[in-house]
Length: 272
Image (tube, rainbow, N blue to C red; front, top):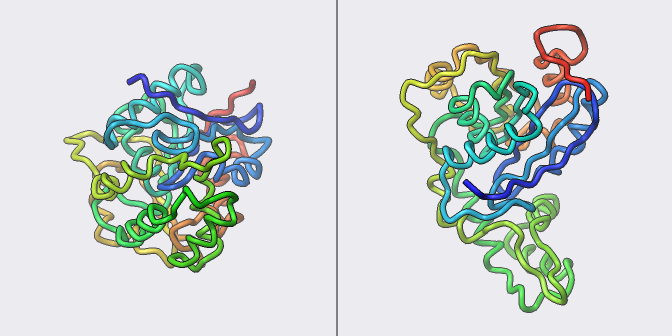
């Protein structure tokens, strides 16, 4: 459990909120959301293992990653008490495992466009991982070179920009900051959800779904509510899988309401 977790803070007062990103992402993907929650919230933007500036692991295991995040929080951001946790996609699964395994660290939980189940459009992520692996980094002298190669497989400029945030200059060459080999090898595990036995989390949970996404389906409801009996489902109109980037204002609105940031309520406000 010595894997280093990298994270950055936004804001210096208000309710403590932790953001966990999805596959290919980084904590900074939530910067816009975190700034919009100020000054009522101070946020921790976490780079999950094998992403961003956090260390790599030898395998992929949701329980292990949740424990690593828990250790990081217990030693710092959550040292004074439980925090709110917001997780998207893969990060949503980590967030669920964190709440189930370390409930003392989590006040309220927000799970964005993912369910505690196997499945979803893994073929899309497989295609994206294969597309990144196909880039010949030995020929890349600037980011535009990588973008040109990626455009042969990924036409959406916005998606390419999101993926290429994982590209880092290393002297005169470029390298991948994310552990792409492991992520591709463990994609089936990433797309699944582990057996957690009879564990439950009995705090309030907001379950957010994108209207145009199929990652949250009616058949997922029983499993979700068995683990999180106080879960409430909200569907964001006009959003696909990346709810927070496609409909940021709506996402901020539901966060503010659920976390009671605009009024005195059950959300714990922490100063400092």
